[in-house]
Amino acid sequence: MKTHSDDDAAGLLLAKALRNSGRGDEALRAVDGVLARKHENIIAVVLKGSLLLDQRKPQEAAALYQKLAASSEARSRAEGKALGGRVALLMGHFHDGLRDLRGAVDQARQAKIPSLQGQYLMTLAQAQATLGRNQEALGTYAEVRNVEAGLDPNLMIINVMVSQKQYDTARSMLEDQIAHWKGKASVDFLEKLRSSLEGSIALEEGNYKDAVARLEAALPDRASASVKSESLGRALLETGNPGKAEAIFRRITEDPDRYTDPIGYVRGLARLGEACEKQGKKDEALRAYREVLSWWGAADYSLPEIEKTKEALKRLGG
Image (cartoon, rainbow, N blue to C red):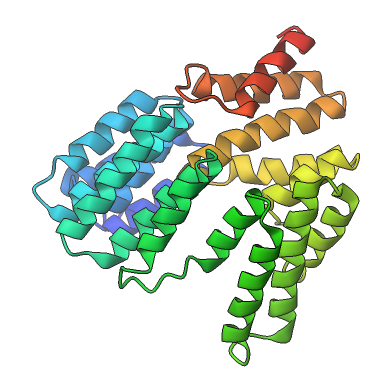
């Protein structure tokens, strides 16, 4: 950068490296240098927004995204709307977040950018399903099939079936999917899909030991040091393995891309607090629980994690 100060790609790589090493202020200066040359560089806007969220400045991140959403360029408007929806979900403004994501879908459709339209539909459906709005999620996933974006929502629909306790339907759908992929994917991969489904069903039914065994069998080979399976983490918590669960939830909550799934991120913080509390790590548990409420303390939608977090803080005197 000293010899090529106008190299935006290098500037963004530097900003990411600085962020990952904990040097947030320096990272902001680096990304601001890129934005000074091109204020609608979407990658730079996303990175700056993440840096602002790291600093617990969601209003500033939202303002940054709103500015992008007011752009004269169609793609920028759609991206800005979607990013604003993520911030709203992160702050517990769930109704606004879902509305903004739907707005991003509409912007992408009007701009005739099917790749973005499909991506935003998947994000919207995931948020709806996570909030327990399963019928809406299924309808949104169905919309994905009408968009030429090369996306297949079937596995996500199977997850919704499991959450609705329609286990036989989920199994039947998976077998149809496996038949479609036969000869195109390895036998090992297809077996891991079956293990993942059975693990999810076992978790839903409360068979936690079986869930752990099946979800671990579904992991990619040599993935134990990097696994970020929320389902496995929950199962481990229920089987008396809070240390292993803590490692998983730390990976989830410290991932540089954690804001792409804002609901999953904050839920991960709640699970991290639970894992730490079960190990007697009171200060770390309190820190995680307080972070949950720093985001969702004024949520407009009732979620079990919020009430459990409030009860945990009272229990720990925090």
